[in-house]
Image 1 (cartoon, rainbow, N blue to C red):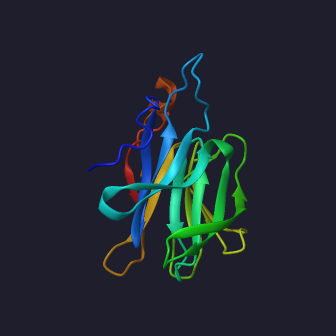
Image 2: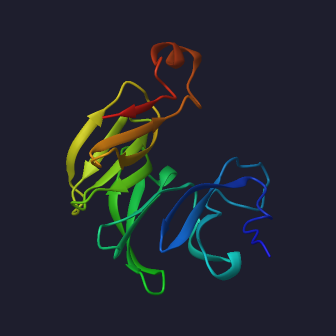
Length: 193
């Protein structure tokens, strides 16, 4: 039997997912409807458990993003984009449970943390929607490096290539004005650095 989390929330959809032992995926509130009984924080993060059932791991989320783990698998990162915040959690790989939610990074007002990845040294790379940048944070949350790109909306990153030394960055055209699109001919492209 398939799980149908949030089926009553017709303005929600799944947005971001990753596997660390078990698959986890988060939802987002795509559009708010006037006079709706639901709030802009009705999204959640789920873990897929036995026979496709969904276990709610985190709630009160607006847009679930940036799900990743540090190299030893004991720290989980998760962003709520409209809140401009990336959170850290203690992660138990045996039970897949999370605890001790705490703020890791807060972004500026019009810069939203989107997709993330952690490198072998434990630094977290975050694509920043609205900021035209990818930021590499030290494990203590301090900025280590900022990579500026010629597009406004960066969506996610991955580390890949034959030697795992490529930074692969996706971007979007969505929500850009006609003027922005004319100035950002590479919006929607994939970048490899």
